[in-house]
Length: 251
Ligand code: GUN
Image (cartoon, rainbow, N blue to C red; front, side):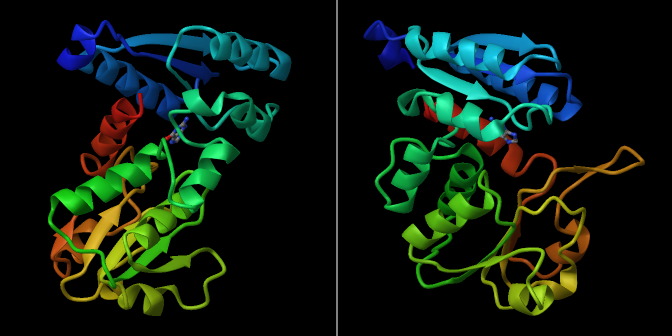
């Protein structure tokens, strides 16, 4: 950042949030705080839940043409808005989420400018922990466009042997038991139990589920799985902070 400042570069991120989803509000606040921390300019566009598609697209069009460097529209959007059209409207070179089809395609061929922040954060965690992915059995649970699919692609680029599990997978437990590296990103509280984890496996929990009693838990039953895993991420405080750090890199 000091080097950027010396060059007169002061990166700016526009964050759009539509409606009042409490989780989205927390994510957006954390992104703004991170911008302040690293010295970026951040602009928040908090739009009411009844914003029309035309109004949202008009804002994106304005930001596409402005001097802002990055544009991020927090998902999910209220049901009446067309998420795909919104993602497609963001200029690919300002798409710091890497959700635009151009950026998704670039990730597919391993020639990318931006990476989606959560999968990028997971890769950084694995790398920084000195874990070698090459040739390892990697099992990703979840096939979302935001996490599961790009996560699988990054593990594949790192020479992992990758399996993607989802709601139709016939024997989840047996598939996960093969894994040297497990990435859970499915949004089902504590779906992955200790008896599904191979002794010594690396377990990364992307899940963030709020229970009716207010507790925040991941997709992995942490205390059970930690008895088997050689390394495991907690929820909260594991992957979440890495996601924000990666967003700051995507400026
Ligand atoms: N909603 C949940 N995760 C994300 C993310 O990484 N980016 C955006 N824009 N919305 C999200």
